[in-house]
Length: 398
Picture 1 (cartoon, rainbow, N blue to C red):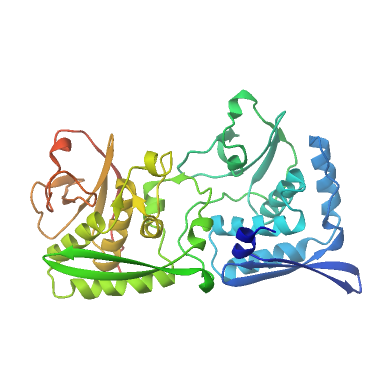
Picture 2: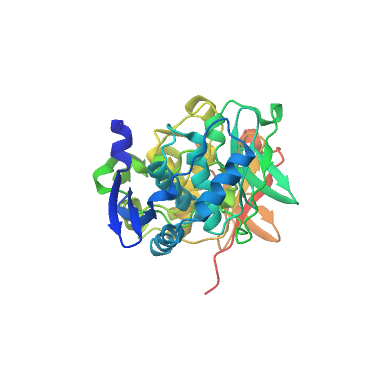
């Protein structure tokens, strides 16, 4: 096992004898917590290459005869206990499948187990075969980009294993569905992440930064965790609403938000938002995604804090999160052909307002510009450029 893999999660396989025969105890260290389940020792199906629909059907018939339910019950109980959203639950399923049948030893069997566990957890997941590839996809009714999708019976199915064929064009070799209907597999899979896991403390790190506002220097020591990047590896492009609202982990939140609240204490609302705008604008190094990642990549607020460089999408998300947590004001995201910025609704608009659905919002630019734009000001290059409101946030009424 490589050092990187062993530092991320640990696999342990134990055999125990019971009255009904031999079972395997599956144990996966999933970030800070540990998942355990008993699995029938006959779980290993005989799925060999070349992969065929008949082979998958025979494997499904075989695994359906064993006592797989304790594993599914344990997975779902763990999901409930730690409030895992679907994306993080799928990461757990991936690790369990890796333990039962390592990906590098038998990719088809590894993918089969992922499909089986997801289906038996209630999700409408499908397999498809092409001449060269095994495609694993799942029903999803959200706005997703950057990954292939298929429409089946009017429903969108997105590809969960496209990263394994990153440079492939599925249109060149269209996959043919493997027909294994499972009546109980009906749920849509969601990419929304509303709760972050507790990361392994051993992987904590601190990011120190300074920020000058109103001739005063502010110092920050933000607690982050290297597991963050692994948790969102292969995470696709999602809607602005989804990635704006991915929360901070407990440790990062506790090291940043109380300090920001203390720093803006005593400032009026406008000055406090200005402080957050300029913190987001100047506390981080800017670089566009093409140069940083080689492609467009939207970062969650915590990923922006973690990353060395970030662009306008990332800063808009972080600014939104900070204003929401500290002031909880109505906001809109304005998307231009080559830029995104934010506007905030104050009790009275500042500068030249943006009117949206009868309400006035004031521009708050969280990304560095050539000129020093203030609240209510638009950078000169965008003043006459059309935009779209791609996300509107209204605080819930309590």
